Image (tube, rainbow, N blue to C red):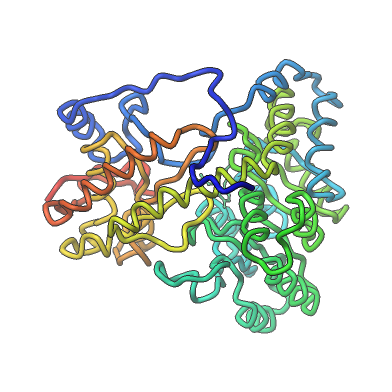
Length: 457
Ligand code: F0G
């Protein structure tokens, strides 16, 4: 460490992708065509795309080189062994099952261990995790600490599991809980980390009740960096060492390599239990592929293996977490309400607080997300009443919060891109009183946020 304050991106640019400036008139036209749904835009009409950090990062020189090592043998490819070794270096589970992305791992696992009458607790289930649990007839339950549900509560590990609640839950549902999950970092709760101490406590509770513990490890490296920064006694440890301790507490994991695999596609399912692994591999063969490639090409396996070596580098993680905080701190200083502390991969704007004149059922998050695109070509993602407000019986209630997530792709945008985002968000926030709500003019019966059309009120 040194005393300089400027965040230096720990890379220089080797290959560039053009991004296109558009005018407000062009963006108005794009919004009309898209029915004011940012998922319907052509990405070429977006200047800074903060829709997701999933699969949108830049690969390194060494990852592009690794693609050339990709061996496409159907069975037993050398690229499989490179991948396996890189995964087990950090997560030494006995069985590793490659999948095309995280939700494929979820689908396979819950198909085997879920089903009617089962209940699966998590700090907070990500939406695909919840959907895959529920698709089997099982029930998904969120047991994050109370601070994790309050956008403005300051807590260093807001992703922690509520240990008392978990203990009581496992006692009340003895025999019906096939697994306890912990999501690191807790994406749906704002990208908030889970402490090592909390993971040890979860493990102890699981042991007491004889229930296995699995990780949703999508952002494991960011979580480990927060542990190093914030948890007493962890400052001098290496990131791989912290990750291996996290892994040692679990019986298995699901993973999307589109996040902390630094890859554009990929994932895996891992576990120690031989019988469970056999059942999962049988399903894998049905839908993903042979167990030495899963849903991936050999070249993807190589890119992920190299990504896993790069994502635990401290220069990278320092830059990554500082640059997210840079965006959050500047917006906070400008008086924009947001979820604090800032998570690892995203900054979440609190649209309900910024737009008190727009009631939740007129979608303040949608209004803010559309305004950021209209004014500055920035695409964020509503996480609020549009996403969570529709109940299975077709009625609507306000979502728990009305947020706009600005997710930051890895190694993709520079500090001047972020300065521009700060300028646009601050500009829109200053004119918040002029924004109007929306009504939904057309929507599918489920997962409406992806395809609904909106009309301005
Ligand atoms: N678990 C978590 C915590 C996630 O954030 C995601 C994806 C998944 C599982 C599923 O992984 O996309 O590879 O199938 N999150 C993305 C996002 C989509 O935008 O937050 P996947």
